[in-house]
Length: 90
Image 1 (tube, rainbow, N blue to C red):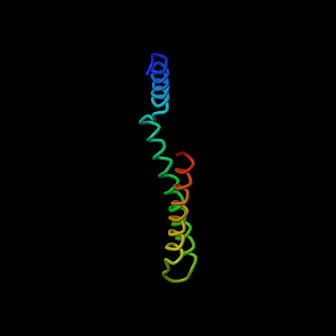
Image 2 (cartoon, helix red, strand yellow):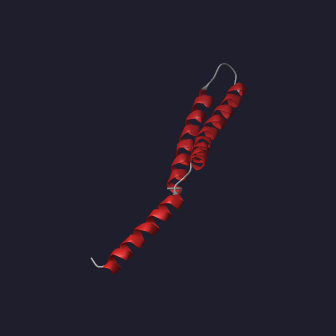
Image 3 (cartoon, rainbow, N blue to C red):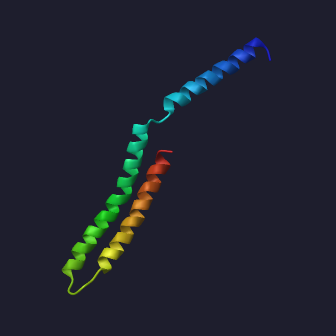
């Protein structure tokens, strides 16, 4: 390997290392990412539970059918939200 090839290789590696350091995520960025993921999952579940309790209160007698059904729907929606968000930001 001559000096010219060695210099090109070293310059290429330096550029790659600088780019990797610049793109490295910080603790704040990781915290924001995890917080966003948790909100994307929790909000549909809580909305489903709240709506289910409200609908169950409207029916006569003791019922939790709406609550359970809408909670499961909220879990499914939350999982899909998280999957799509992670896939988009990969």
